[in-house]
Length: 112
Length: 109
Image (cartoon, rainbow over all chains, first blue to last red):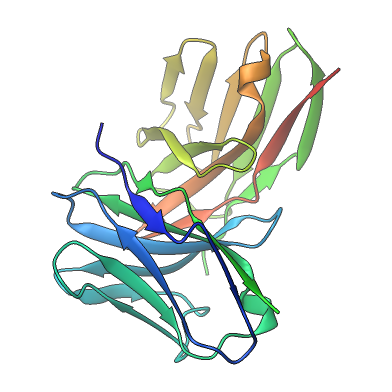
């Protein structure tokens, strides 16, 4: 069964450094998402992406964040200058159409 | 902004007992989705409800959407250890999902 993949599974970085989280959505899917989940808390929407542009973003998704689909398969989330409070699990998700979102296994980001 | 409130935060049950989690909104929802997240795992889609008063079943899981489309519930009959995890409701609004806080199902040893 096709699945969303994410790399790395765990990323440790120092405060102020840039990180890029990578996702490979399911190949024929059209809509792509990034979510984050601080440990033990609820899932928070960051951004949605369709037709090579951002369709919606939350208040969390400020100027430090950016997304890209550089080559038609990868979907990346960049955090320009990480802060301690960016430490969380980051999930990528994709859908073809309809409503079921398929989530990747997540990247645990630890900012020290 | 639109919010979805979910209770309880935790529910401890003996294996074989039932489990219920509730979601509420102050505004009418066009849809409600339910996800399960196993410990250390990622959310997995369970179901979407869109019709007023809708009831759907998946084996021991029963999902309901209220008549006014402002509340929803997930009921698990005769819980098993495989049911352990956090159950989230979420409302799909335009291109985003608005999530409830989740209810963690804990099976007492």
